[in-house]
Each structure stands twice: as structure tokens, then as C-alpha cells.
Amino acid sequence: MKKHTRLLAAVLAVITLLGLFATTFSQPAKAAETTKISTIKKRGTIKIAVFGDLPPYGWVDKNGKRQGYDIALAKQVGKDLGVKVKYVQVNADSRVDALNSDKVDLVLANFTVTPERKQVISFAKPYMKVSIGVISPKSKPITKVSQLSGKNLIVNKGTTAEQYFTKNSKGATLQKYDSKTQQFNALKNGRAAALADDNSYLYAWVKNNPKYTVGIKHLGPNQYIAPGVKKGNKSLLKWTNKEITKLNNNGFFDKNYKQNLKPYFGSDVTAKDIVIK
Amino acid sequence: MAHSGINILFAGQNFTRLLGGLWVSAKISIVSLVIGILLGLLLGALRTLKNPVLRTILRLYLEFFRIVPTVVLLFLFYYILPKNFNVNLSAQIVAMLVFALWVAAEMSDIVRGALISVPRHQKEAGMAIGLNGPQLYRYVLLPQAVGLMIPATINLMTRVIKTTSLLLLISVMDVVNIGQQIIEANRQVYPNGAFWVYGLIFILYFLLCYPLSAWARHLERRQNNNA
Image 1: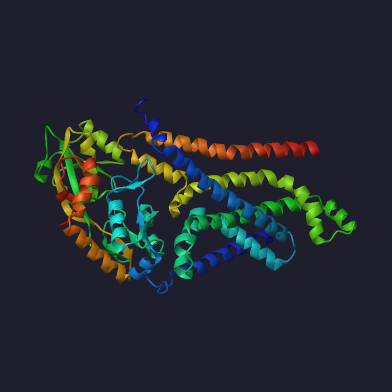
Image 2: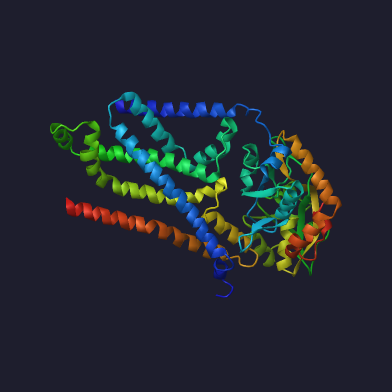
């Protein structure tokens, strides 16, 4: 019995300790000095969070060099600031924390603007747009949503495409699959008339499967990809906004598209479908 | 075989990159094991003392690091603590720190268990010939306890080495992280590349861990012969 009381006491103590930690952490972070442009210039390096496993946006080639659409932008940012770029490879779910704990100054990692994220970090001007697309066999192309009525449509669980068609099915019957591999196999086996997913993902798939076409390129609201900076870092946010505007005007993104995305997307797509003007 | 994807292991610098990643994993394991085991020996010895305050503090330390999952600890030390305390350590340093504290905690329990398993008359005999406290630990208790610690310590070592695979969460470029870069870079052309990359990583981890268990077996056998 005595042993049990001691054990209980120990457990309670640990819980209290954790509780103390938790309350310490939930206090608003001190107004830590934000990394201003001048700080970055003095330091001589800008720390940029990128993906290492998402071709063609941020990936690593066989020689260990970072490549991709986001990487090209990161390089340009470093060049225009006159500083070296230090890449910090992140996962999708650590992008916000990397910014907030000052592990990075800027996030260029296929960062989709969402209202939830906007509450904890700041987004600069977007540099890319994606939306839902629909692919179908070239022999029986589906080019309008109305054509889906009474037909089967494949979606991947957990994607924006699934959300969109669950809300407004347009008369189509949904077939939901767990993985990308399954959904594409189902389409190849003729289980449905079409398949809906993120359009940038579909462009790449169609490139390797020329019997299919992205009949509907844009559906539903556009989603924007933008650079992320720490909330309150006005200096860097302002600079990044100017930089995106400048790069938009001098055709940098068109060039970047041709270099990094076009080889993946094929000729079905043009820069206009992705790049923001 | 030509299109199975095994060739991606040897394309360009891929193989060297994986070995480089393995070195990062090994380096973090070695540093944290050395620091953690030394600290653990000290803490374990302290835990056999009768001082109730010290015992409670060390017990809480052990329970904290044993109960909280390593992923949470890494996240806490890398992303959350810097925000509040204004210390910003590099990912590898954070990894070594967290692993060393974890090893020290687990090690202290192994050491304590081994020390109290040394027969009581050994300690009394040592006291009878006039050894003081530290001498008793140095010449009587520790040498006899080491044999009892080895199996559990080696087990802890292999656990630490395998747990380095979590480090990709805090941006450490370990072998698994580099493996994923290679898999994803080749996903379009070699969808089955993952099989080969993870297969190689399996072999690399095996090469790191197997000598340890062979060594443990050897030490135990020697111990048995001496007894």
C-alpha cells in the first residue's frame, strides 16, 4: 500500500511538473527582437526553410544539390539581398514552428495560404496558384463539370478535391480512395469516368500517362502559395512583398516555370496556369 | 532488374550521401552515449544514497525522460524552448543534448539496479578493510556491477542508434532524411525505389548495431568464465 502511495505521489509530481512547463510555454512569447533586413545583411546569411522531398518544388538531385521552383526563388532572394542562403530542410508540419522559433527567417516550401496559418504567421504576396483539376481519358474527355452528372468520379481521401465534391457533387457519384497509387490505378482500370485532385499533381501525372488529359484545369477557389515570415517581422515582410512584385515584373517566375516545372508538367499546361500575374 | 530502381542507390553521389547521413546518425549517437553513460553512472551511484531529497529529484528526472516520448522532447528543445528562453542551438546540438539527457536518465536506473544487486557482504567487507565511500564505489561496487549493467546498456545503445531516425523532425540530415530525399527525387521514374533505399538503410543500421550486440555477447561470456 505504501508503495502505491509513493508511486501515485511520483506520478502526480511529474504531472504537476509538466503542467508548470505547459503554463510557462503558453505565456505569450516575449517580444523577441525580430530578424530585420539589416540583421540578415549584417549576418551575411538568410535562413530559408525548404522542402527536400517534393519535386519539382523543393528536392535534392543525385549530386546532393538542392533543386526546384522554390529553391530557384530562394537563390534569387539571396542574390538580391546580397547574402548567402542557408537552407533548413523542414517537413510540412514544422514550417510554422520553424518560423516562430527563429530557426528560419523565411519559408519557401510550397506554403499554401490558409486562414488558420494567417493567425500565427504572416504571408507575403503569393507567387503561385493551384486549384482542383479533373483528369479523364483523352478518348472520352470531360471538360465541363456538367459532364460529370450521373458518372463516377475518383477522389483521394483528405484532399481539397474530396472536400469540394463532397459539398457540391454536381450529380457525380464519388469513389474515395486512400492513396494516390490506388486512385490512379482505379482510373486506369476504368472504374470511373474521371479523377479529381490538386491540378499541379495531375499535370505531372498526365505527363507520364499520355492517354489521359487534364480536361478541367481549374475548379473551385484558387489556393495560393506564398512566402511565410514570422508574425510581426514587418521589415522582412515588406522587403519580400517588393521582391515578389519585382520578380513578377521582370519575368523571373516565367523563366523559373520553364526551367523547373515545365519538364514535370508537360505541354498541357502553360505558365499562366501556375504563375500569378 | 534494369527498371527495378536499385540503380538509384549508386547514381551520382547518392551512396556517399547516404553514408554521410549515417555518419551524422553515428556521431550524434556516440557523443550522446558517452556523455549520457558517464552522467548516468554518477546519477545511478547518487541514487543508491539514502538522502530522500536527492532520491526524489533524481527519480523525477528519470520518470520525466522515461515517460515523455523522444519526439516530444526533441520538439520541446528545438522549437519551443528557444522561444521562451532565447537560446537558439543548432539541430545537431539539440539532438545530442536531448539524447544525452535521456541516456543519463535510463542509465541511472540501470546503474542503480546493478549496484544494489552486488551482494551486501561485499560492501561490508570493503568497509571492514577501511575503504571510504568513494573508494567503496571505485574498487568494490562498480567493478562488480559493470557485468550486471552490460546487457541493459547495450540494449540502450542500440535503442539510441535506432531512435536517431526521429531526428528528421528537427531538420537533422540523418540517413533516413537523405533516404527520403532520394526516394522522392526518383518517385516519378522509379516508384519502387523506396524498397531499395530503405533496404540499404536497414543494412546500414544493422552494421552499426550488430557489432554492439556481438561485443555484448563477448563481454558476457568473459564475465561468465571469470565467475
